[in-house]
Image (tube, rainbow, N blue to C red; front, side, top):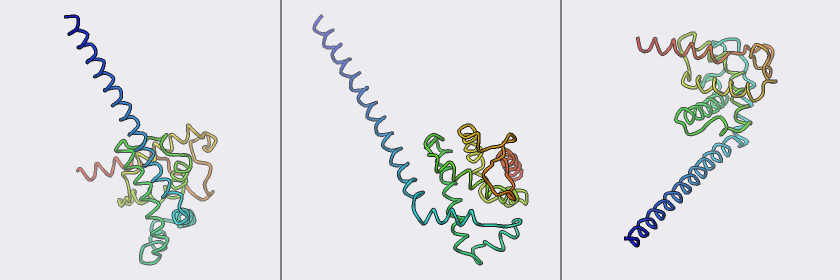
Length: 194
């Protein structure tokens, strides 16, 4: 009787140790997977080609959507349009990873977060005008942009004025608050579902 109870106790301890070891291995596998994902993103983000594409996007100037389309459409200016598209899709990819719960804000380093905020400071007014005209490009990234900006405001409050406007932008650029885009997104979704 005592031997059977001792054997059961040893078996139970063995099972518990096995469960603990399995949990530790799962945690380590998750860390490895996240590290691989991060390095994959970082490898892409840190290429000379991608850096040049970002700078091309930041150098784009327009007065309104029509002017932008005339200057930067894929027929007239394939190279810059490709840069705009690649940079925007990279941010959209991050938005999808976030939406699926595969990354969090802490996962993104300062460089990626800064690039996202700078991209929004430059492109936000264009995206807003496209939405207002009923032709949004990537409305699915608006929640992500809003989350990034809110996170960045907490992390770097000195980069924003007392009204929540991003300070690091050209004086002629209009800062589009992400909440405005969320409202436009809701309106677009309501129109699509009506």
